[in-house]
Length: 267
Image 1 (tube, rainbow, N blue to C red):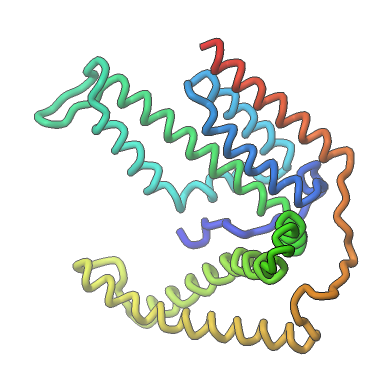
Image 2 (cartoon, rainbow, N blue to C red):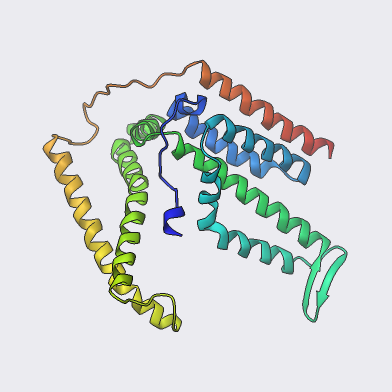
């Protein structure tokens, strides 16, 4: 399960999404989230599904990454679906057993919410899949640059956010190694009561915290050795500029966003 978590990973490539400006990708990701929540029925949501699939094909990211990005949140998806399935009581009754009842409205809402969450995760994951940590840092900093006027440490905030995102795969890999080492020593983390399983996590959490602090100290030392003192007076080798692919992406998003609004109006 831990190896299937792909949050924060970057997959190098030369697709149109990889060539886009990081600022534009951040803004359009927010627009994408809004677009999914604007969809009010199954027809407009279908437009969002088509948009998500086409965008994924354009990114040239392997299809197996979709499944990997969904597996960690599968319990949340199932929990949300069950809540909507059994707690919505309006509409025609499709199935009933004692106090449990599934209605047509509950079934439709469960499917609708499940599809929306899946599209949300798949589409949002493309931001980190196609954007390097350095570009992501620069994009966040440039978008938040107006906050510098009120003395907000924008560069430091952007750096912390990106480092945290970047170290998610590293910590997951470290956790997987520690678990494998503890199992090799005979640790049992899959059987027994809930309290026993919780106690079995202690030999994993302690080495993980020690490793995390050690990595943080090494990173801080490396940044200090390179004379890093925040964003004051820093220059960039790579300047962010909007290109034709960014304007084409805006048109692409606008067409599908307008399509969802039109479908909402007509249905």
